Image 1 (cartoon, chains in turn blue, orange):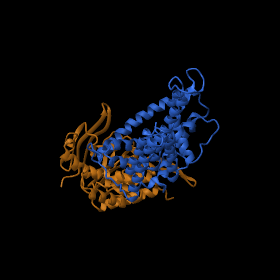
Image 2 (tube, chains in turn purple, green; image 1 turned 120 degrees about the horizontal axis):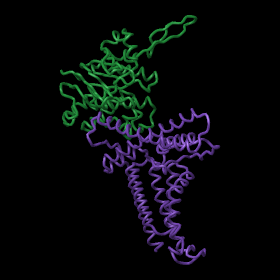
Image 3 (tube, chains in turn red, purple; image 1 turned 180 degrees about the horizontal axis):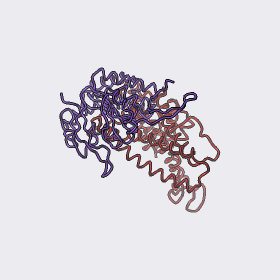
Image 4 (cartoon, chains in turn orange, brown; image 1 turned 60 degrees about the horizontal axis):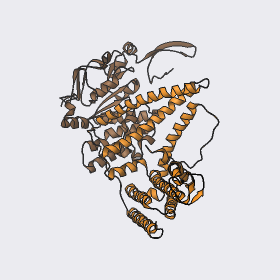
Length: 292
Length: 269
């Protein structure tokens, strides 16, 4: 399943008046399905990264992510974070929603993790804001900024792969990169079944709402949700059995071979070359221009 | 040449007391188009799964192309490969059958399981895609398809294995009228090609149009009758008894009358 991190929409979220739990849940589920489908549309746009072979893209982005983790200087880390946004724009992804997603997923957790590091208790040094052992220090701020930029840079590169690669191509790339067939097949089935279950749950909520004559209490809502969760769990087990039967019916005997339909061209090799050169340049600048 | 399926005294219980099939004797010959019809819960789907070696009799025997069809016989890789390459099953719910990441992979899954060479696999994928007119969908993810498209892909995925026998569970389910007509045309082509087809359905009109033999299952999970669609559909009392049609009272102008009613029935008056 494409993680929520990768869901992106160019439109701003809509605000509505207070609604029932059933309606809110159904809307959220419908939105989740729509966003997964929208991701395929983003990945099909004729942008810079969408045109790359998924294997080359995975390898190059992995290189950028590793480079981010080795860089120490703030200017270089900032440059790499800016690079992710530039690549997003060149891939026809709106910068605003992209930044929001990167910040929501990585920045928030980065700040949470980095918050203790800004204090004199963890990182002693020149105090900027005195507050006893929780005083904010200059070295502490540098450490926190480095951590946040690293996490944001890594998440940005990861998000770029998710957004510019169709799910089917990503799985094909994983297969080509020798990820075990069963792992790839399981990922594919998981995506398929989650989409199917999302639609089932959405319809359950809508069916309930269509028969509700008055507003249910919060307790009734919770009870209903728990009961439906049990139903969905049972259904998912049944579906898993049926899918296995369907696999057996088509000769499944334990292995899931696939045919690679990927092909590299001059554009991919150029990109790979530029990526390697960029990573090397970033590391060199980090070490030589901004030595620790 | 041995018959694709010979069932002798076949019974199946999902658990003690939960009977799904009771004493089924049935021979399905090569090239026949057989419709297994019956009310909901009569055992049609169980029978089809049994013919595909997915569930097994709790009593009685099945042979397929002269070989016993049992759980242990299908554990033999040679028998399994032979059987799976000759018998294809289109499930009622296409969502269950589509488990690969793309339509292309879906169509290639069966041929790859048969360990065909890459060129042969690609040829079969292209052939099945052309036959079902889904060439434009090959790069799409199955979850992003409409219901009708999913059904086409599910059928193509089975056709890519070039089976001698096609088993289809409620093939017209979830299809719009246009797609239903298309499916009946496909079944007609298969009849011309001499392929054996067994469909499970409660749609009598589709069954009559697609098949030359009709096996009716009763609500007691037994074969109630077996014959040509013409003969079976003439047995109104029996069809009422097995709950495939019902008495239908309605008005035409000022007059009111009652007659048996079935799916696909059109009033000429």
